[in-house]
Length: 133
Image (cartoon, rainbow, N blue to C red; front, side, top):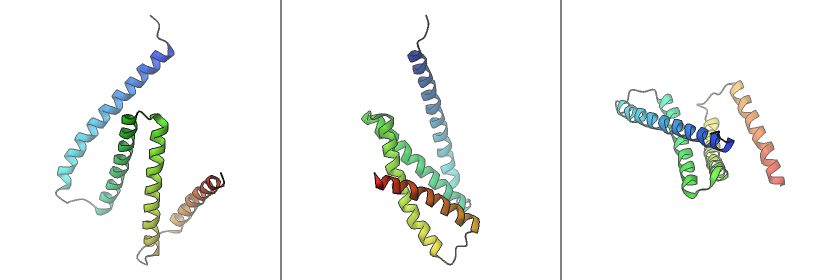
């Protein structure tokens, strides 16, 4: 019996789904172990902040995917939910970044400022195009 491309895609999808599920279970177990270690409080504050931000992003992404799967919304619904969440996060980050950069205690390098400017300019171009439509 020869598999059609549809059957092969279904097999590939199943394999990918199994792989993502297994990795998710493994990481969940690791996070549970890490929680116990963090309780000791012996961690660099900057590392902890970065970790919390990454966990928050994955939490929001997984929530969006779950909502889409439960609503049977497909890829477009997931992309739309992720975009809304990223916009919310960007608003928060811009507000926090403005406060940080206004503080005399912060001293970003010229390269960091230039990199930030470039990213903001790229985003501004896209926003202006969106606004025009």
